[in-house]
Length: 253
Image 1 (cartoon, helix red, strand yellow):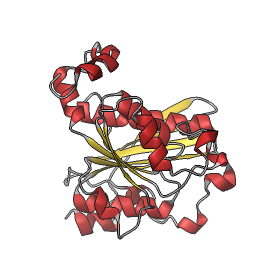
Image 2: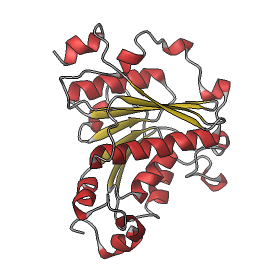
Image 3: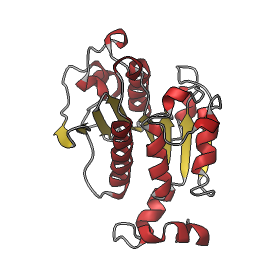
Image 4: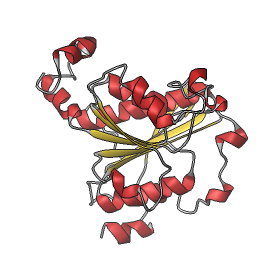
């Protein structure tokens, strides 16, 4: 494999057996840089399975430290990590899977001043529990034509959708789905609770959507996957453009 070492070939040997993970496709994955904003209940399993699937470059963004209340769902961390910076611990743990994976970190929460540091990413994942950050990422990715994956998990429920922002002729964005959401009114896992299993499932689905998208295994563009983790139900809903979305006129037309 041109972009994989002999050691990596051994690490991914079972993966390489699968028809869809041809040398050509693996070379595609090796050039994808994934930015993950939020190394929490979704971000932890997401990063693990991206690295385990052959992704070779990640950018992790999170300004928080590990707390005991994180441990039911943030599976990269344990009691020995309490008080440590999440991005530093995550990088260390992920490199135990593949130490040839390039992992950059930003030890701060995302805002208007530092969001430009994500500009070189192929795709940016919103794995936060913060609607203001979600809206900021949605608009920035549209402006810069960067692919964007939104993920959310609360209680037992989860939703994930990937937006192909390189397609200017078919505008669909997060604002088309949630045009009037106010951050003050939205529930958060610290208030309503969250199942660690459902958060993990969201991370797994997000990872698979990214692999599907870049290897053309399945059309993931503008398809929202929703699930009730308790009932083990999964549905896919095609999201259509909202003609009066203000971002349509700002960044597309």
